[in-house]
Length: 200
Image 1 (cartoon, rainbow, N blue to C red):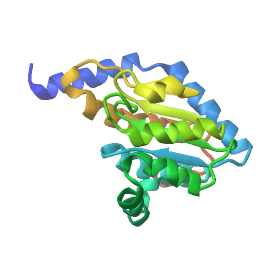
Image 2: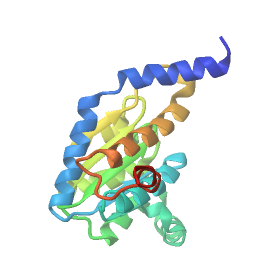
Image 3: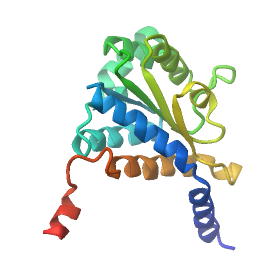
Image 4: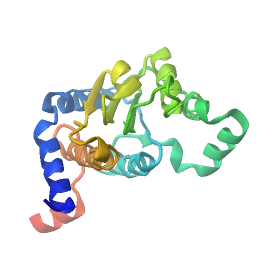
């Protein structure tokens, strides 16, 4: 089997294994945030940071949810990294944003953070702070979900079907899932351009 065919076969297998109930739990948490006028903060590193920025656009524009991600402000991100260190950069940004119990923190990550292995410690510290202030935590993560899956109020884990392609599939399915979220009738409040143009 060619690599291309094998990769697409893996994607199909992942899609068939996604926990639909977990996605619905995330939808419920996002509905709660909308009802109580809370804010959505999306955290990601690397490719997941780019996904976080795209997702912020969609949640704001399509769902009307006030949403932000720290990696959209490179000046603040690099200043905090330089002055305070990488490990606390997200936690301190959330503190500066006055994160509170009405808000929701969403993590997009391949591994979900792991202090013992020093993988994405900034995500772990951010979630520890989120739990301190009683903010809701959700995640879309890969592998076993790491720290995010341990503490999240709702978490979708992208199934691992091949240890050699965990990262690309995890980051790709973050996009699949958040696009599902913003398209869900329970969250979507504004029509998207192409769909509304076709309907007209």
